[in-house]
Length: 578
Ligand code: LR7
Ligand code: MN
Image 1 (cartoon, rainbow, N blue to C red):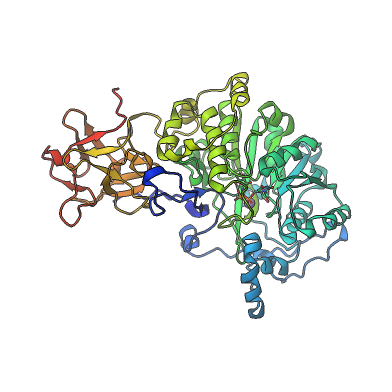
Image 2: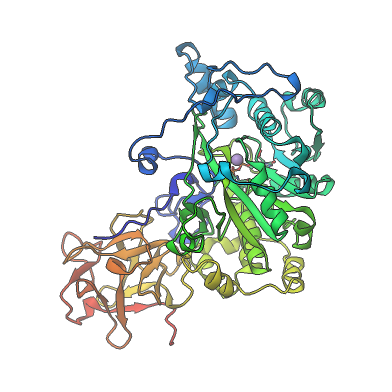
C-alpha cells in the first residue's frame, strides 16, 4: 500500500484569490490558494496525538509578575496552565459576534490573564542543557509589528517575553504599529508600556506599509546585537530565548526559529507542535510544514534536542544577528502587506552562505487563524502574486517555470523592479537555486531533474490529464485540453513520478483507480515509466498502462493491460531530451 507521507498541512489556511486564470477560470476549478498561517482542520489533533493530547503538568512555581505590575494570575484562572478557556453560555453570542474583529475568540482572550501561566513544555534534554553564561550571550531587541491587533493578545505577547526571558538578554521591545485604527493602540498603549520594567517602545509607521516594511522600520531603530521578530499574538514559554541566542553566539550566520506551537483561535488552549516537522514549500510557493526526513534525523545523531536544519522558515518568529541581517540584504522592500518574505529570506540565507534552524529547545506559541482579519489594499491575489513573483524572478533561476506553469494567471500582476535584489544576489556571490535544491532540500516537491513539464495529452481522445483541483486521495481527472497550465501541468521526474504540485499519480491495486496522492519520494505505488517512442506510460508496480477513460468513468483515466493502442498513448508537454 501507499505510504502516506504525513504532511502537516495542519497549519494551512485558504484564501481565495481573484479569478485571474483566463478562459478556464471558474471558481470551482481555480485552486484555493493555500497560504501560510491558518490552523488546525477538524480532526488534526487526533492525527498528531493518536493517543490523545498529552496531559501537561502545571508548574506551581510559574507565573512570576513583571515588576509587580500585574497580580500573579490566579493558579486556576481561565486559560492558566495553557488550558482551554470556556466562554460562559451568556457570553457565547458576544464571542461569536466579536470573532470577526480579529479572527479569533476575543472574549476568551480577554477572560485570560495577560500573564497567564504556562507549563514548561521543553523536553528533558533541553532543560538539562548548559548554555553559555548570560553575560556572554548577545542581547536582543524584540521587534513586533502589528496592524489592528487586539489589546489582550498584544500585551500577552509582551508580558510573556518579560516574564520568561532573562533580563540580561533583553535590550528592548519595539512595538511597530502599522497604521492601526484602534483607539486602544494609541496613547493608551504608550502609557501602559511606559510603566513596564523593560524598555518597550512604540514605533508608528504613519501609513500602512505592510508587515515587511514595518519590520524593516523596527529593525532600523533597534539597538540589540540580535533582532528577534515575533508576531503580535504569541506567548513565549520558559527558556525560549537562551537556546536561540546561544546558536547565534556560536555562529552569527545562523538564523534561528523556535518551534511554533499552536494557540487555539477558539479556546486559546496551548497545543504543543511537533519537533519532527520542518518548513518546505510547494509549486505555488506556499510555505508548508512537512515531516523532517530521516536524512536530517540521522545528521543530528537521533538527538531531538539538536537544532533541525530547515529548508524554509514560517517567517514570523526568528532571531538573527543584526549586522548579519543587513549584510544579507535585510528584506525586499518591494514586498507589500503580507506574504513571501519568509521564502525569500529562506532562499537567500541558504544560497548566500547562511543557515536556518528550528531550535527544538525553544517553544513559542502563536495564534493560528483561518483567515486574516485586516484589509488587503488592492486585493489579496494582487499582493500575493506581486510578492511571489519577486521571489521567483530573483532566486529561482530556471525552476521558476514550475511556479508560472501552475499559476498561469500570475504574470498579469506587475511585480515592480527587482534589479537591486538581483544585484544583491550577485554581490553576495550566492549559489544557484539548483544548488539549494541539491544540498539543502533534496526532498523538495520541486523535482531537481525532470523529463517533462507540461500537459499530458491522450492520443485517442485528445483530452488532457487534469487534477481538477482535487486533493490527496482523490481520483485524477481527464478534461478538454485548455493549454493554460494550471491543473493540467504535470511533470515526469527523474524519481519516476508523474506529479502536479505536491501530488503524485498513485495506484495501489490492479486496474486502478489512478489517484492523486501526496508525493512521498519513496517510489512504490508512485513509480511510472514513460517510453518516448511508443508514448506508453507504464505503472511499474502493477505493470499496467495508463489509458483514456471508459464508459461510465469517461472522465477519469483507466489503468489496464498494456496494449500500446492509441488510447494508451500520451504526449508529454515540455518533454526534454536527456
Ligand atoms: O499590513 C500588515 N501589517 C502588519 O503589521 C499585515 C500584518 N501585520 C502584522 C500582523 O498584525 C501580525 O502581527 O504582521 C504580523 C503577521 O501577520 P499575520 O499574523 O496576519 O500573519 P500569519 O501569522 O498568518 O503569517 C505568517 O506569514 C507571514 C507572511 O508574510 C509572516 O511571515 C508572519 O509573520 C507569519 N507568521 C508566522 O510565521 C507564525 C506561524 C505561522 C505559520 C506557519
Ligand atoms: Mn500571525
